[in-house]
Image (cartoon, rainbow, N blue to C red; front, top):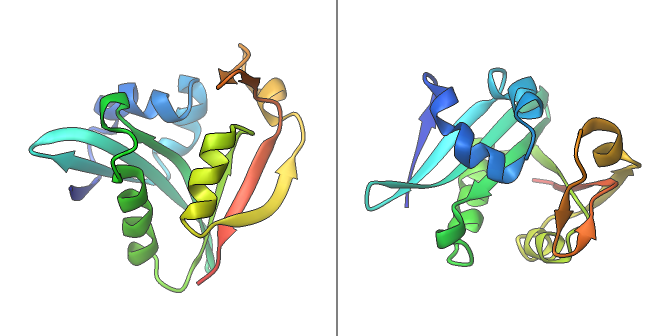
Length: 146
């Protein structure tokens, strides 16, 4: 997979970004202040990731999405490795829902539990978000230290 940083035309990536964060106004809150990385396989867009710099020692992955037909083939893991190498020496934070397979994926990639923001999804999203039969309520924050 070839990964490129995108600085212009970020709106064009919205359909795939909405796979990682289902509400467009929420994506817009971080898209312009974040760095957008796009992953391509054989010239086709397969993954995106938005990273924001939170302070001198921490960055946060705000959105990581892989096209449905390319999932479970290592593209998400490669995007994480790219972010980790692009931000050496930084703690990488990310927030996700309580979806078992998503939490397992991040744990396998070396991320561990940091903290929980209670009712994040129910308080900030207009429609309920259900993944794998789980209605998302709390935001689970994970981190990976350098």
